[in-house]
Length: 177
Length: 459
Image (tube, rainbow over the protein chains, first blue to last red):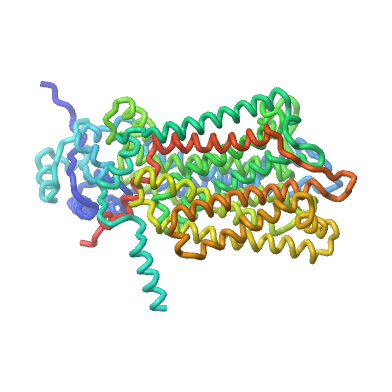
């Protein structure tokens, strides 16, 4: 019989409170490669599984690039490549460049926030092993899931299952990869 | 003070943001069922069909315009702007309420917004799309519209960055892009819900592709929340800037009646005023037809009415300052503009404007009217008419009689003007009908966070 490699062990919970408590206990028990799934954002969960977030930095860099390129483009057009003399006024008329600079800052910042978030999350990713668990379809409705990845050094098929059972889940399933 | 707090509590109890008794499951089922299992009603087909036919009329009017040129419109010299710019400003303004609800109220932690932000954002997109048509076709040669963007070209030509009309190009295209991103990113978790709940293979594939493989991981939610908040933080100054820039199209010029510093704040307030009126005109029938009174409660309608009352007074203040400055500036052309509004050939439109935007909306002070859906719907309609008249008064009445009486003229819209204007309303309705049929019109995941069970209790 062909055996499929295992991606991890998944436990199902009824409420956000149970999931947060379980995630804390799993992390304390020494499991580091874990993830949790919920139908809506739960702030405490992000703390419990210790995740990083570089979206603000990406957005800041994008916004700076947008603003700078917007201003420099206008400067280059109005002063260097296509100067138009309007009643002897200065070519570098910076007050009238503010609006386009501002709009470009917002545009690049917003695009960086959205696409930066998607890239850092590894999306789009139409296939993922967790979708192999039939009950996981409830994760977008009213169920909460915790997974310990098989790549975790502490992972063992029996030990991890016993540990997850001690957390009082509704069900436990092995996730084939 | 204590009495006041009690009053607020009583008001909240009588009109909650979400009716008690709902769970994660019922909220999900109720909203996703509208898209997935509810049979499409005959009323939907009739509404969609009528909207679609009106859209076809618009395409016909635009097609004829492309063949004949802008001479088929009522515009002339001195009134070169006419309906195209009136409708552009009107539609852009309507869009503003969507961003206000989705971004500004999010930052202010007004969680009641969660049930109306999705369709208000859709309204923004469709309104900005309708608005965008007008300046495009008003150029006369819309196929050359890309000349407005700065790109290296063989003509060795660059746009004029000192012109407010170019600022408008940047402001409106940024506004549309950011609104689209904001709306789509808000939809992703709900599209994942539809993917998992759908029984139909084709729907599963389409929603699955659009959901980008969203699986609700805590790491993803964490970054998602910060991207969403950052986008709201960026959209807030953006929405205030867009109508400010639109008002610069007028205020930077020297035409009497346009060259005033009150324009930016008064345009932004007017935009939000008309936008909330449109939100009410959409929300009242939608919640009735789809039985969504549990989620779009009387509280939402009352809050929208209060926002209209507040912004309506800012608009009234704007009219007051305009009239006062016409007299106080001592500038005879400004004084004449005021006289012309009160006694000129278009004076009846100015009085109608005052009635629609200032006097009739004062009925909203009456609590009974704020809780009556029909009353609110009618007042919202009056405000939308009033705000359209405001743009007509500003644009046509200022242009038709400026400095030299040898260059005075009159403006009368032609049937092509009306067909294009009514056509964009049809396009807007068609898009709204499609939206409520194929996408969740209320944000499901944000509604879940409003439920008491979403709160994580301390151990």
